Length: 294
Image (tube, rainbow, N blue to C red; front, side):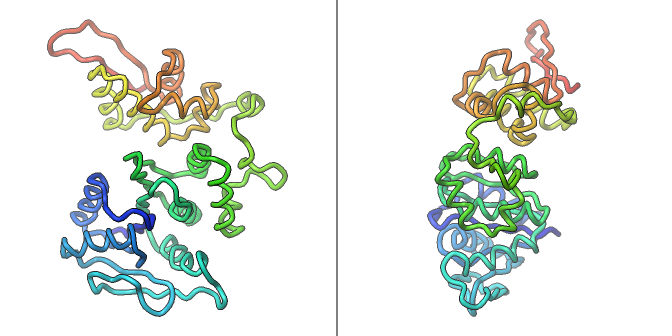
């Protein structure tokens, strides 16, 4: 039984269907849930588990008593250092949850930095997390520091500065490249960066992933194809793919989304980087276009 840290933004009061499916999987697997006590996503998650009569839940709070505990579950009260106020007062419990969890599920409104900061805390503890953007209805798996950096490059400097201000120096040091030139001030990958010798990526050998990409290609729907390919690329890490292909990260992000329209050569370079080959076959009623893992 794994322990799942589920958190999110205060502006998220209703859970999307995709998130509910993930919560249903948690229940079906009898995982232990740790969740905060705030209004918004925390309260919505509590409500969902309460209505499901799920008992494997622990509510974390800062201070002496939780603001919300809809299921009267077990509680963990985390006391912040004396004199701590505001955001940092409530962040104490989030840091403890990140340490205790095996995985994280963050339900994000697409704006608040606190939820994204919890993904960084999970990374610092060596944990994988899923960041579900409610606004875009998109889930991003964050497994590595490079993937986290790639994620932040999609947002403006103001958001990144706010995130840095809320993080501790120890948390932020995890994603700083060096002390003289912060990656935060960079808006694109330099030619020097891209000319570095690439580190070979492992071949994409997951049969389920190949089948998903196959199904998208067979559908003939360009939007679906780009959505699937973009999801696979983000999961692998755009920084590494940029090095492999010689393409800028920002260009890859724009091209490999549902509304992207990349050149065919860009698609081929990305597929090669992922260790995937396209195989053409004569169309027959029972024949589909195949993608073959290298």
